[in-house]
Length: 237
Length: 53
Image 1 (cartoon, chains in turn blue, yellow):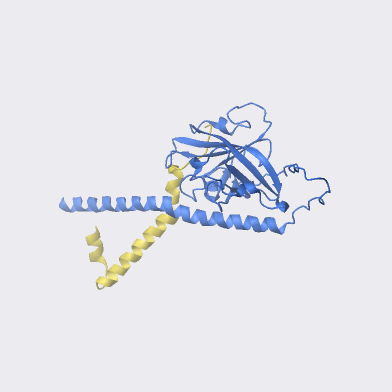
Image 2 (cartoon, helix red, strand yellow):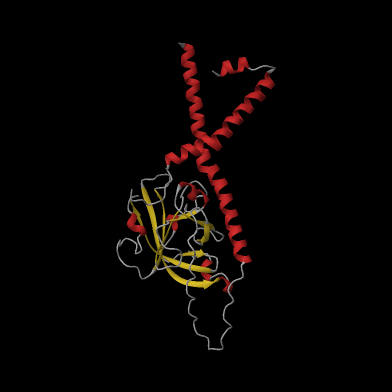
């Protein structure tokens, strides 16, 4: 009897240690490995894009200094599920914040970066470019999502362009509320006339009870050949 | 359980300690690479997607 009790006790202690180990793995180890892999994806995307020559911009005209119009958005081809196709920059999170955006929002895709909802439009298009990211674990790209303020820049770097979106609003919703990623956010069925970006993450942190959702509107487009936009500068205050 | 484990291990105390450490390391490795990833996919405490289903 005493022996049985001691074995059960040791088993319980072992189970406790393994549970703690799981927490360490989930919160720190996945962060480390996914974070490293995502950084590698960003560098390889940048290298691939640099190798392809940017389309030469038209020779500067001699017209007086007038605010030049933004170039039209280059369409981004829909990649296969799991393929990275863009880099997300959020200066509010960190000056050097850069996370790959991959096609699809499955468990595996979200380990490799920020996931693009396949049923929403590609970056810069009229409609809603909706993405999901982990707020904890697996590189936690949206860890600071609740720190975003209205007016903050969210910059999507594609193969040929920089797309600057500005945060317009945020909301906390139930996980089933898919209307947040509708072509016009929260107005399912409405025909879109503007280019939106929507970010979803879990809420509260470490819980899947709700979703933290941020909506941003496309503000400006810049060709890669013209260099990074000013919107990448860290926000004041 | 652990007393039994210590008794069945051969050799002097430092060989037993070394073997125990190796087995423990193997268990941790197995957990990190196979067991924990499989469990995590079913827990989804960190799901950040919206889904109509």
